[in-house]
Image 1 (cartoon, rainbow, N blue to C red):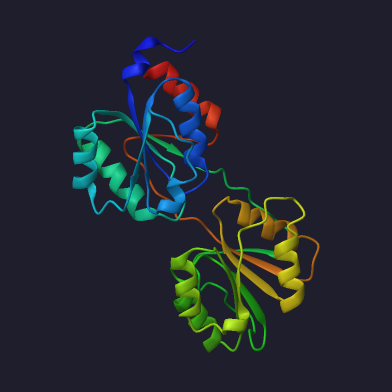
Image 2 (cartoon, one colour):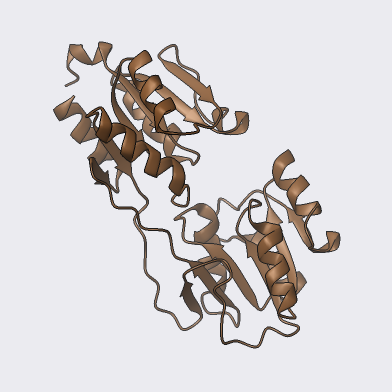
Length: 265
């Protein structure tokens, strides 16, 4: 049963994935006041409107800004549900919460190690090594931030590059401003069904040999895994970076995290 004191508990969630809205909904149902930080307005629109929900849009530059926000808004505990590759913000949260002795709760998507022959784990976006890439068709499903840099590297290796990016202004601008041919760019949301028909159709149409994506635990990763399994294609997964937390508890399931919160705060 929800304790009445939670009416006055302020929680801060930082997330750029679907985990943020899911956790926010659970905490709002328990009468917590939720501050949710997102980088884009598009991410903020994923949250259900609620008088006890406050959306903050924009990047946080350093741990000083984090500390100021926590103190100004009387935050009782912080939830880091950011993207697994958003290393800088997670490092800053870790430092800031440690400095002011504020509880930091980390939600991570549990990695699932695949051992199929056509699944390969690499350490970086440029980690496809010791393979002849001449005239190979590589689909980059890595987002837009490092798209041009990554594509340029594999083009220099003799490969043909393709990409699928999200239908946002930033992603589209970066994709069409990259060294990838315009005809080799698809603008699509990830499939939300197990058939992954959109991704499969792209791979068939472009005759893809290799798919490169990041181990984010997202719908996108799972779609590529389903398509690659049992096919002649190979999947190269960039391992998520490891971060050592000094002042945090790590959780892999929503209910476990929420149960911990209701018992302690």
